[in-house]
Image 1 (cartoon, rainbow, N blue to C red):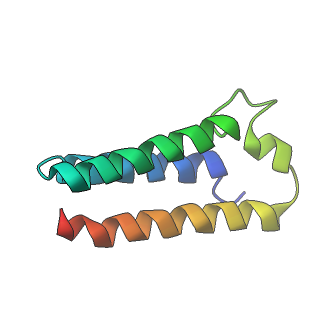
Image 2 (tube, helix red, strand yellow; image 1 turned 180 degrees about the horizontal axis):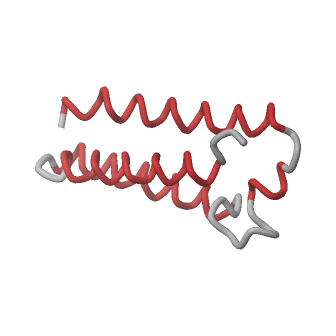
Length: 89
């Protein structure tokens, strides 16, 4: 099976944590990154990304692999942006 949305979201969360640590020395940038972390966590909670297996986003996607791929690619794009932006913190 391909990477789950939950796995990709965990990697994204780690990237946000890294970006937040780098940005913490700069108040304005740190506040912006913190806002994005909160938005991401709200999205993940609303979508039940890390919920129990029978109600999680991955479970609800089921066999719709193309939708899972889209979610994973979007999360990977966020990770990529955070990695590139990390040099500015």
